[in-house]
Image (cartoon, rainbow, N blue to C red; front, side):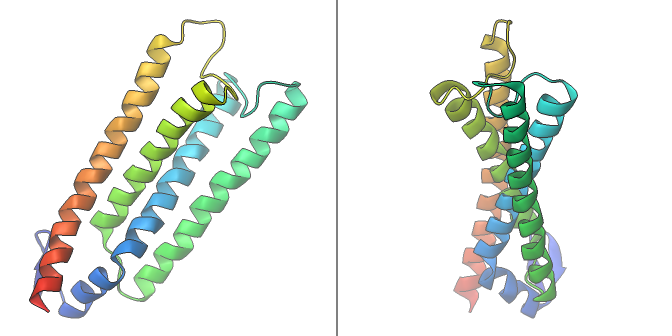
Length: 168
């Protein structure tokens, strides 16, 4: 038995975690990206009606853009879950690394949305007819917090991965 991250796993699983280390990270990243996009679209676009993905045209165009955005988020989420299933099948799933990737993906989506889509491209704002400063601060700060959690988890698994490679 090998000890990794405080729990014991067999040597084959420990080896597979190292072999599929980047696959775990990318599967988690895609899941986090897709999940954050889904939450954004569902909550801010559909439930609260604060904005559409593209607000520089008619409501109909905004709704179509929301549909395309929603399809993208589900494509990323479902694709990541196929990758997750493949990792489990190969006994290479590394939950801590996968969750770290998910936090990184969610935070990356949120930061990209807050900075690029809201400020640079001006596709939409979080809300309209209100002072945006606090909305922007909370939006982008929460993105940075999600990314920081992801980085910490990924770095913790990276150390374990480096130790496992050294032991071979």
